Length: 408
Image (cartoon, rainbow, N blue to C red; front, side, top):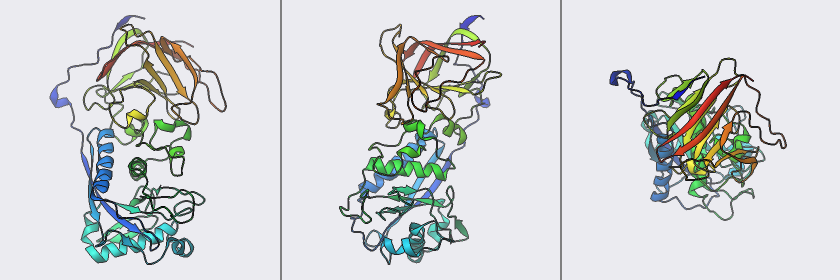
């Protein structure tokens, strides 16, 4: 094999670069509470912060290709208030029409919105977000005091438009407050903005068509249900969408050869450069797709430049394999030779503080298998090897040496 330089800044004629399609989504935010709730109506600044956080998250994740615009449906006194307490809807909902008691509640509230604003407000809407207070345990999901549900739970028709009950269609429901225990709220305290933001981004992901990801991914995926719902939910903003979710939504084209470089032949010790993953221009992802391999490997660079990437344990390279917790490679030294590189792989809990098999080494090797523990699955044998060393980090990009060698 020959050594050489893998150049990443390639001249491409301007006309060859297709401009990404920008989609704008119109959200209708509806605020509602049941007749027993006593929460104060959220302030203008709190509501605006939630909208800005949701919009900002998806603008970053989509490289500016997904824009969210929010309009509000607010009653004269703030909340639209149901005729009955939450307990009434839990017992009286129609299973043929409603997913649960909250869905019957949503239907009643949306009829109130129609009477106040008319059908026009729905005609101009792509998705409805129902902001509730607290229906207590079993409100969305049996035996769980969750903080949201990825659907309206009922089909609602207005202005020749239908908002379906199923996930990924008409909208979703988010709680502003929860007591995490008793059937009805006692302290009337809002959840933190971070917790509400997490639920908003998570449920919006379902509306986009994303499904729950394996629990073992932990903080490496927004759609991990392990972080979802009850009192164990961490008090921080949402983790980023993982590489596979971004590709599925079409915000990165893994075959375009411009933003994603495909490597399918062996080579030795080539200098490779990647822009930081959130960069809107340039090469941000490597796709290693070797003939005969059981799985593809993706490599990206994260420098924790925003609130979301900040939940990762450190800045550096992430080695992604579908359905598996990624390797994080981070430089442990600011010296130019970058000899101290930490390989860290998380266990099934996905906690950033609970690494297993951590080792200090100056290279990453695909054959490096950390000590087994619990139900962890070791790396499967592949007909090639990967090695990464000489990592040089900067704010916007990373340089490293990469080798791909054939043979078992």
